[in-house]
Length: 193
Length: 230
Length: 111
Image 1 (cartoon, rainbow over the protein chains, first blue to last red):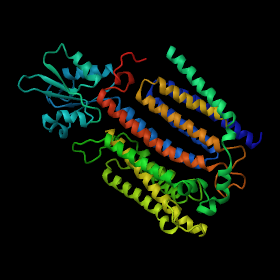
Image 2: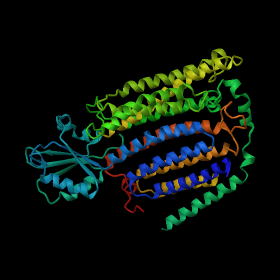
Image 3: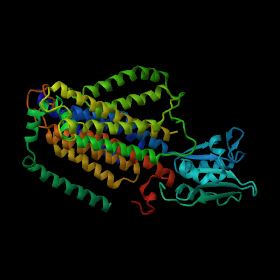
Image 4: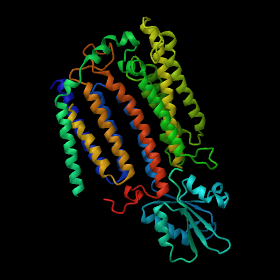
């Protein structure tokens, strides 16, 4: 077997692998696994570029497809598994001592379990110290999904979130039996506006 | 199920059309351009790498608008990911206590090598495979490694984007210099009858500018993403 | 190299784009289509026994450098467009609480 035929057969083999990888990417359910597949997909295409006598294109593909593309996929997929809650109530609703055990936490945990999300509760002083009137802006401009606050006059706990979110509709359903919890939905604004 | 079957039939139809097109592709595609580039490319542009000769000389408009699209995409990403509230310092998702020490040590060794390789690919773009686009991507990846070494690193995105805009205008300026020497836009500013070595000056300058442009653009993009991943 | 085998990759990307239920999945499909089309373009200029398009490196007939010059810009632009789409998907998630197409578009019959 001489060099030319060997390269030809290598090209056919790589194209077969490429088709298999493409089918796997399209049909696979888990987005996390697909990132590994897309990195190997880019590697196989880079080898095919070299077989096509295009070393310039292969360098560009390897430089971009090996680090930057997987990184941005990893970040955006990990972001889409999070549910960020800003705890402003600061009493036994969510935290009992240092433990996450309050009624509010149990509720939110159930919600997160339902949608397979990761609950991320912060009481970052920088965000908590802001005026309450800015809550709506806080929801729109940052990635905070839900704000937990306490109404001083009535003693009710207030959940504030975006009306457009499907998570908030589910939360409204779940909190109906509780008398001391109120859900406030901010008015829908145009996306990106 | 019916929808899927219809979709498969449609894709099969597209494939059949493509098969019929490739039958007489040789009538549409000819070798005149290729022969011209092979015979005159080195003498006219001073570049041994004919790919570089095309995107820096024959078709500089393409590269110019490519850089423009990069600038617009970066601006869009920054605008979409904009957070207004007290966010001067970027806090990155990389956790110092979770990253293995071995990884950090190897990053320290790899970082300067990648940076030097990226600059080599940029500067040598007219002689060997490489050039501004590829080298810029390699330099951007090297800067990405820097974030693993130094977790508390602060990046001023505003400054980077300002430099990027300046580099974009420099590209236009260098490309327009040929109006004075040759009387036409977007080509080499050395006269047509000068030596190959002197023509390479223009290629190196423009490769460096494009390399910086691409590296800064990709740097901005992944900084925006890392900031998003807090 | 067979252009038909490469075109199958493009068609798989189209299939994924048509059937994906998830925004991220659609972005993956666009990446696949892009790679397939780059391969098709490179295939156009390539022929058996050709050399890389660098004068002095290959004394024989070189392959066509024009498609390669076009495709380099495509790769860099493609990565930035992917980044833009992913950044939009992050914002869509925080606005609607989901990245499933059917729920984002408000359809309950999402198939």
